[in-house]
Image (cartoon, rainbow, N blue to C red):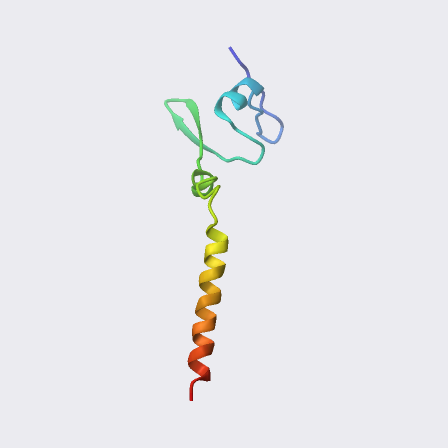
Length: 82
């Protein structure tokens, strides 16, 4: 059985094997719930973490920049017409 000790500030340190198994890293948030006198911790998956890497290998930024340049050129061409 793994143990965690409560500090004077009410903080606990999760044992390393637990952090590694769940992929919990420094600064990550956990949801805390109490059920029948037991503490339940759950890793919170933020929206950003769920999307991390979703656009890897794409040229989305270059494509957006190109579209923006084309839009600017169209607007400038419209304003130049007499």
